[in-house]
Length: 438
Image (cartoon, rainbow, N blue to C red; front, side, top):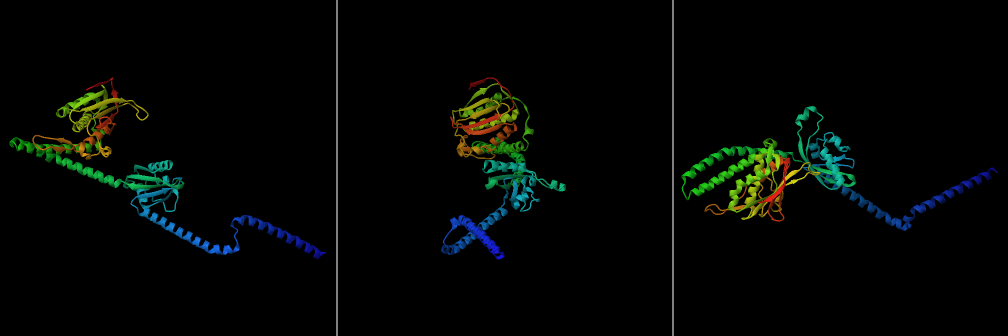
């Protein structure tokens, strides 16, 4: 009886085990059904599988080498580079970026919020703007490094930085940073040297002019024409030096040079034209004014007179004979961009206009544009000569307009094809009804 019970229990146990194996085989068969192949083919697939695994390992090594090469290039690049994740945490930066941004607290492998390491809200805004727009962005700003050591604050200098950012996958952003401070320092040193040179040139040029004037009285015809030519060139040099000194002073501190008063602009334009009228009469050039009358603005009268004198002089130089220079003055009302009305003055000639390549640079100092806009003159019996401006006139005009809080823009007029200079000045005090007359 005992043996019979043992055998019965063993049979039940074996039956239960066989049932579990059957269920397990059915489950495995369902899972492995897509991979089921004859046993003979399995033997053939093993070498191919090993070959594929080897190729994958080689590709992985190659990609790792390429990644390391790119990392080495960024490490030794003359520009700074940093990369942040979608939460603006610094992932990696090269040595140049560490030096520019004073990232002594950051160690490779650390992941920390960029704003904690670099107190530059301009850089943070550049990164956010790049991530939002998903397009490369550029920004220039003055970076004031933070320093934990109070004793070293006086030794840490501000830097002018330029950042160029680009969006990366998974919300990451890469930023190239260029230190423009050496170039800025070099430019200031060059301008200071030229300013000092201009100061030194004034005295000998004045002496040369006095000598030439003395010679002019003693030299007889026909040799006196050469003395007159020499006197013109000396005056041109003196004017060039004076313009350079004036432009340097305006750029250094424009507001100190202004004496604010109420100025009636229409009369000021008429006064500037009267000064240039003898030059205009030689080419039978007329002026046609249209716009508001009796309008006043708060400005520096002598500086504003200089603006109109220069702009009208350029229009006369580059206008064909027997043409008309149009001067239009209008009041532009305030809008969402302009808090108050501004006076807009348009000066339009009928010359050749500006070339498309010159338009972005016409207000730069010493910029020489298309020589077709040069003025050809004939003096006495001398051969015709090309007189080109100093390249500083429009640069001075721009600085004076900016000092008044205004703006100036150069264009080509669609009707006349000539140059179109548009000046906008704020601080309008009063005006009356508009009139048209020539």
